[in-house]
Structure formats: C-alpha cells, structure tokens
Length: 217
Image (cartoon, rainbow, N blue to C red; front, side):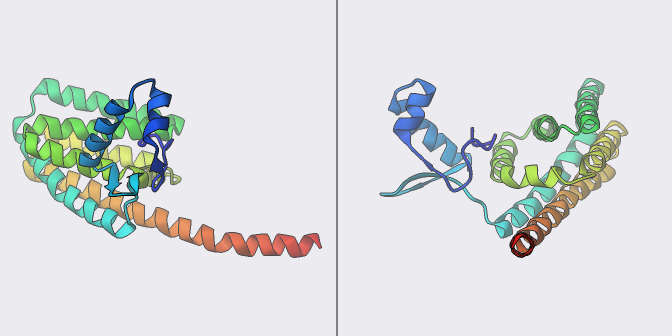
C-alpha cells in the first residue's frame, strides 16, 4: 500500500485501522511496522506513532549517488559471472519493459524496472549488498514514479537497460559497470528535471488562477 501510493508519504499509520482493513489482529500489524522501519519505508516516533517516511530531495540525491556506485560493482561482477540462461532472463525482462513503454504504462514499467534491477543485484550473489540495495530502492519509491512519468523518458530508460544487458552478455566488465553507473546517474538527473518541473508548475498555478479569476469578473 505504501509503494502503490495508497498510504502517502508523511501520513500517520493507525494500527487499529490497518488491522481492521487487513482482517488481522493488531499484533502482526505492530510487527509489520517494525519490519517496514527496517526496510526504510516508515519511521517510528516515540509518543507520536508510525509515519510513512518522507525522503527529502537532498537525501534522494545522495541515495542515487550511492546506488550508482553499487550498481557499477554489480555490472562488473555480472559481466564476469552471468550464464547464458541468466542473460536471456535479463533480456526478457527488458522486453517486458519495452512493451510497457510502447503502451505508455508507467505503473507496469516501474514494476518491471524495479524487478530488473533487483534481479541484477540478486545475481551478483552478495546477500549483504542485496539487503542494502533494497532499502535504498524503497526509500526512493516516491521519486521514481515522478521521474518515469515525464514525457519521452520510458524509451530512453529502456535503451539504457538494453545496453546494460548487451554489455553483460558480451562479458565486458568495465563497459557493463559504466552502463549501470551512467543509467543510475541519468535517473538522478531525470529526478532533478521532474522536481524542477513540479516547482515551476506550483509557481505558475497561483498566477493562472488569479488571471482566470480576473477574467471571470
């Protein structure tokens, strides 16, 4: 529900209400809150309650930078270790991204995109890295949707994913690392563009409303 946006960032989570909604007792919900805190999706505040985490823009920027370094390592390792079967699997995942992009289906693209990157890290075979990576991805979920929803982004992102798989398939560690690093940093730049657009829209909206009000008088 958090990842789908049903429980927006900053909202307070009511233990009893969620337990009733899910048809369970409050105990499992309390345990789920603790697990969600560990995964970076909620924060527990003493004497105040549980809130969906709201990641500041500056922190999201730092997370992208860290992800880029981790993903570069993953690309290098997979270019040295991925089997033909694993390469075919990754290519099939990009195929699904291409189909979602062709339809302009941002939700399906986002789900497939997240699963693709998660699978890359899984195949790298480092459990500690996988746990850290998943926490970082959870923390970025609010920004990723806005980033991919920009016009013309899906085809560009898809090409970047295809290049990553091609470098891994060719057994070129340096190139695969660069492709993944560049892709994450490009995603970071797209986040900046999305934020700038949102700020501009927010600044223009009051002016537009005032203008429309004057014309209606």
